[in-house]
Image (cartoon, rainbow, N blue to C red):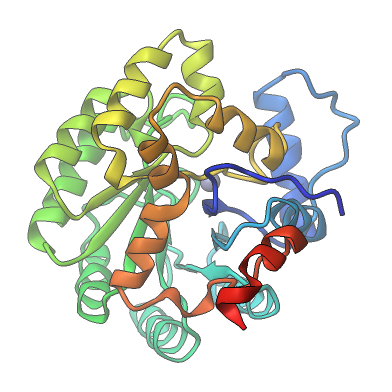
Length: 310
Ligand SMILES: [Zn+2]
């Protein structure tokens, strides 16, 4: 294992470790839609290669998402995520639901996975799963999450790339309504409504219970010539932004993604906060930090700290 030693990144708030089949399918789609520097002969990621990247970076933990695309597969997919995360120190699973799940099935999954299996929230992907954030059943899910102090994690942004008519502006209105109606619920929005950074700023200002992640954005803002605007937005709201890699659905390795993040012109405090302190603080405040990896796999670090820990 070739260790890398991030200076600021300690937590990855956006990872997709899934079954090898789903990873391979996702990788093929990625290469089709984002032709880039990596040739299509590069092997697809595997659960092993993704977790190795996380271990090499010595991260304290990560959020893991695996969502059902087809009706009738929710239980099987969440079971897989549970089994994977149970064997992986620092892995925090999110429950995923399919919009066609019967109410009884949804209630059973929520009760079982949130209460007994320590899933820390629910992840929704409006485009891949065709879920609008004004769906009535989602309000019931939010009420239960708020009561149980768990997290709602939603995809935002890139409506054009997903060829969806459910645009950022409309989704933002629906998300605002949820944030207002469930003020104690913590909501994390992935991808900062990109390319609508103006919406990201507006919602962060209006809703103190909203947090956003930067997953996959660094290459996009560079490509679009919007680095300064993005940095300004991240800097202004640094206490409520999380580092996320979107590993499995990016062409770069986790090490490359961390290196590119740590080179951003943000202050030390913002880099540390976004790099992991914000996520760790959030988990602490919700009483969910129990699964964090405590020991550092860096032997030098372990020796330096041995006086305090023994
Ligand atoms: Zn993702």
